[in-house]
Image (tube, rainbow over all chains, first blue to last red):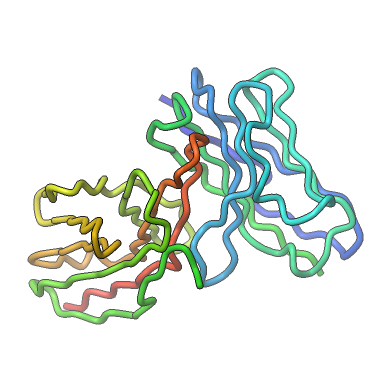
Length: 113
Length: 111
């Protein structure tokens, strides 16, 4: 079946602009996670959704970052007033439940100039 | 101090060699442990879970030592296709399922 998909695969933007990154999880997966991976580092947790609600947003670095999952399926990660330090690969993962195996999407490579 | 620490390498080994990676974690309340594999410019993929009793999957053996908060991965008879970054991963003590990743250890298997 289809895996986790993410769009766009690459995004180049200018400092100060607003960006939206989309994640389409595996069908039937109620849990959805966003992670951020900087060059040479492992992924870092950002936020976890169980259904429509953000059950854990402790990894969001500041209030410029926000994510939604209005219908419990597709999620959008929104970054306001982007900074060069936001440049990274943003990974989405989904799982059947909160403690099940997480399957990752291919990521969105964000470059802020 | 990072919650999960790994030697980033790189480890350069010839085909057929046996190679071992180690990892330590700081939170003694951590509940689950994994090794993920990540190929260059690809997403991480689950390689295997790690249990206290140790577990084996073909050429791969993983071990967990809770007392020392130490996780290991052994790869026997290395193949060229094993070249990748191996991420040590811990599931935290909360019930959210969030994964905490180490920096990753890069393995390059050479002919």
